[in-house]
Each structure stands twice: as structure tokens, then as C-alpha cells.
Amino acid sequence: MFKGSFKTLLLGSTLLAASFVSYAENMHKVWDQLVNQNVVAINNGHSSVVNYAAMQAQHSELTTYLKMLSAVSQNEFDGWGKTKQLAFLINAYNAWTVELIVTNLSKGGSDLKSIKDLGGFFSSPWSKKFIPLLGETLSLDNIEHDLIRGAVDEKGKPKYNDPRIHFAVNCASIGCPALREEAYTADKLLQQLEQQTVRFLSDTTRNFAQNFSLSLSSIFKWYGDDFEKGYNNTHSLEEFMLQYPKALNLTPAQQKALKEGDMKIQFLKYNWDLNAQY
Image (cartoon, rainbow, N blue to C red; front, side):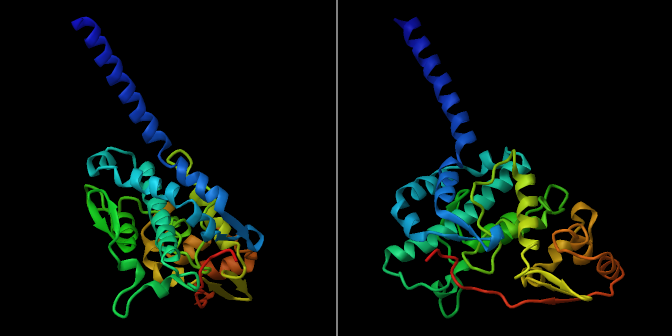
């Protein structure tokens, strides 16, 4: 009787461990299915819109995914590699942004025109603390600026130091880089970030060169410092852009001017309209 109970206990423990591994590996599959079904590419694939009404109809699935994210402890998170951590945080930011919009729709906000309308007189929607994550109640700003951009390693250096995250996090606005039609995952993250970067930079409605003037999204004005921290051995916005001459359609003369500091850089007005499929 004892031996049988022990075997049963051992089998149960093994199944539980296997289940945990499966859970950890498949955590983002629910989100992957949601964005795959409800995010639509537009503008020749450079941008995307979200079918928020369909997301609202699948709110139970979204809620299930958010609960899975919330169940991850700080200790568990700390035990992951950097790419797994970063994929987790990007997905969390995007999923809770969608949750913010869908929750508003559920309250009768069908005429919502911009995520900025969800802020108060003295606060923004990004500063609202409504996200149970890693043992705390956080805001979207906390995820982006503290956990991603502001994270440091044991030596006090930027932990992730990848400005391409700005083309992955999505603020539910037309001006934002596209919400990707799949979840970010540890094994594909670097490739996904590179694809998102090229996807955004090659969008001539938001980034383009004309003569010796380079017009860029305001993202590069707001987060310019992130492009000066040595990512891929680049220490300036100009050096970062020179990594993507094909995406920006830069001529050899324009590349030379950009390298020598002879190209004027200006920033375009940002479109805060909701990225909704109508």
C-alpha cells in the first residue's frame, strides 16, 4: 500500500513538473492566437490595426492569458534568460494595452477615438496602475520605462539595451509601430525585433529621406537616448539609422551626409488615433 502510494505520488510529481515545463513553454500561445486572429496588416504591411470588437468577444481568452502572466513570480522571472524575460515583458505591455481598450469598450466606450482619452486631467492612461505583475501592481509606464528600458544588470549597466523594443511595444495608436500578428518568444525574439524595425523604418509615411533631410517618427525624438547606448556598437541616432540604409531607401550620397553629420533630422507629428479596425 505504501509502495503504491509512493509510486502514485512520484508519478503525480513528475506529471506536475512536466505540466509546469509545458506551461512555461506555451505561456504565450493564447496571446499568439488572439493577435493572429484579430490583428490585420495595413499600409502594405508596414502597420496594423486591431479588431477590438472581436477581442472584446474573446475577452475570456485575453483574461486567461493575463492571469497566466500575473502568476509568474519575480523569482521565476529572475531565473529566465534575457530574451525570455524581454519577450515576456513586451507581450505583457501589448496585452494589457489591449485589455485597457477592451475594458473601456465593455463599459460602453464604443466611440473611443484615442487611448489618450482614457487618461485624466492630471494623469495619462500609461501611468494608471492596474496591472498585477511580478508581485506588484504596475502601470504600462512601469513595464516600459522601469522593467524594460530602465532595467540594469549586476554591474549597473542597461540589462537589455536594445532600442528595437520601441518597434515592438504598441500603444494602441496609428502612429505606433505595428502590433505584431504573433506573440514574441525567446527563441525568435531577436529575429522578430529586427523584422519589426525594418517594417517600421521602411514605412515612408513615418520615416523618409528627401534630399539631405531625414524625416522620422517622433519616437526617435522621445527616446533618442536609447539609440546612443552602444547597441550593436552604435552610439548615435545617425549611426543606428546607417544600419538600415535599404529600409530607409538612402542613396550613397545621403548615407555619406548622415555619417558626416550633414543631414538634417526632423521629427514628424505623431498620430494618436486609435489603431482600430473599423
